[in-house]
Image 1: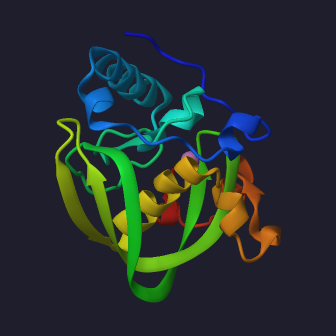
Image 2: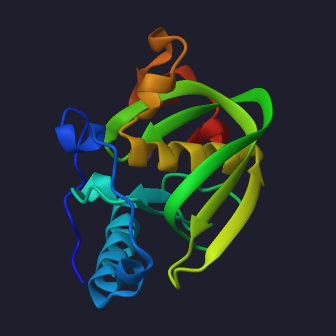
Length: 183
Ligand code: NI
């Protein structure tokens, strides 16, 4: 296992469209190792999601886990760990909801982003089996943020008003609600 350096905004790898996995690749030992490394890197960084391009692997893989012991998001609900290969996102409810988003590839900053409040994701799991999940509210934003990394997009690209971009320490000073934050 290994902890990777997380690439930061400005690195061109974060702007590429990631390649799909074949089912054989998903089941390959190398992918198991990659997955273990991604989880370890995410745990170390203390985030709630990480996509392969963020560690320099331009492939369609992302993981998400909301855990109670997250340092960055102490009041969050807990979810099962999600392993997502080759996702396809469909919007189920176009009504927009806004959260203050953060990103391990954009350290120290938060920005207000509005996204559809309910989406469906078709994807392959770690056993290369087809799965569908419907997510709404906060989790819908988490999934959309994370899966955007697989098409070369960062949350700053989704901001309607870039003037809301702010440093985390300034948010504390301005008493912006911590409940509306994610990574
Ligand atoms: Ni991110």
